[in-house]
Image (cartoon, rainbow, N blue to C red; front, side, top):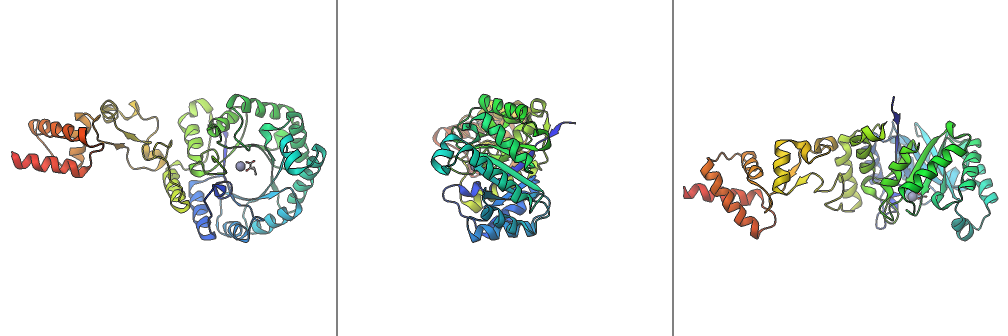
Length: 386
Ligand code: KIV
Ligand code: ZN
């Protein structure tokens, strides 16, 4: 049986750290309900110590959203952990997610702690979280810039203290696929207790490699991928959920893993998140951009009309869209034009079609995109002249 990759959605936590986004409890609950429909495995609902609003949102999601694991973030200190535990009290499947930085840069400048102090704080944090819930995730922040021997020691100690998930973040989006894959491989080989836990990755997109890095980690044994809808998140964002899922889905032959996502809810989720957050989706964004299933050139349009798989590696229906879009413009051919006429209810003779097509091409030279109204005008004018 293929291994299952769990999808950990952090739209409501790291995603909300996108500059300019601030969600209220109602908005977060609405998104969480949609994430439940999408069938994500884990919803990171927020960072309860960060504000009363965030606490209330995590609490409301824990009380109302059943099915996925609900988690809240906490730094490796008792105050954060106790607050997260309080917010998660009503969750059907609660998880506390605690983290501390492990890289020399973070330990020296941010934490002002030694390796041994970090290790001690991590163990104490995991034990504290474990006193509230069975499921505890431990993250080594800035793992990709950490000393690998220390990282392995830290993860080993966290697992012995009770962690059920260890998370390996590329916090600053610094790593590359080859390097990150090797890091995952080394951790899996060198941490003796690794078989007892889920191995998670959390990649940022500063160099545009978050999705590639996460997928490489899957090849080397990661079993949970942290991601956010539309790639939202701190700075350049997190790995985009829809890209991870559709890559695993479309290239199942290559990755040989399964996921539990209801892909037909992807488009709806993306739209909802964009509308509520006010963060616009670029038209050429993979999977959910307006152009992701649009074909403009005549050669492509003819191909798709004849056999969709010529230029479509996945169907628009698989993400919940009803149809692909043939954008009519100067590169469009007769086949696409005739097809649009048919869709609009026009039945033209060969001669009429030839004349209408000629006028369409003239117009397309002057106008970038030809709308249905333009076509209507061409045809009506044509018919009047006959
Ligand atoms: O990027 C990061 O390291 C994080 C952690 C809190 C997991 O968001
Ligand atoms: Zn992050």
